[in-house]
Image 1 (tube, helix red, strand yellow):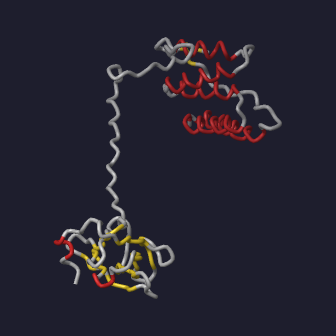
Image 2 (image 1 turned 180 degrees about the vertical axis):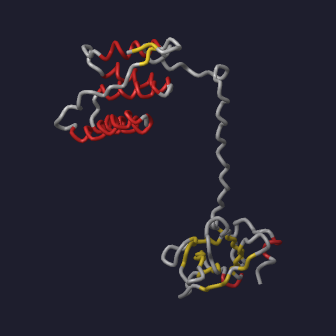
Length: 255
């Protein structure tokens, strides 16, 4: 141990004493490599070898040597962290404890790591982190709102909005079946300027007590990708004379 010209105590790095045998045999190679690198003056590669050896075999003395190596290149904060960890893990009777405390005093570092303090809005040196504002989710409209009742003998116009519900589609079809009919009638729905689709059930088919219908979206491949209702479970429109009438402007779309 010798005193430098600036009054700092510099501890010579003499890495004597092998790492204990047994489960830590693999660390001995890295320890010897660090020892050879320090003799050649390659301090940073030696630190990496010492840390690798500590990862294989967590011997506290390796932390002491890491602190010495950092102090050699005047990286005092890193050296202090290594010494603090050594003091925390080393045995009470370890003779290197007094040397580590002397080195910390020479670097004008406290003997223990400072406690973490609460970082208030006005005491932080760094600017406050910008608050992340979540993006507003685009309102996703349903494909179709089922119609529950309508007036008999009057046409019914049904709307479907595939935007946001179907990524790729070819056409929308309306399938309806009056009461007593053996099959579903199929009509292609037409789009308007807003890409909303419309399908009409003619007045001649609005008879009896109810009408069944379902809407399907068919992709370019011919596969159904979405819809409202199915052939086995269709939507049902109850026909009632007291049902609310649809606006006449909408019914102009019906043929």
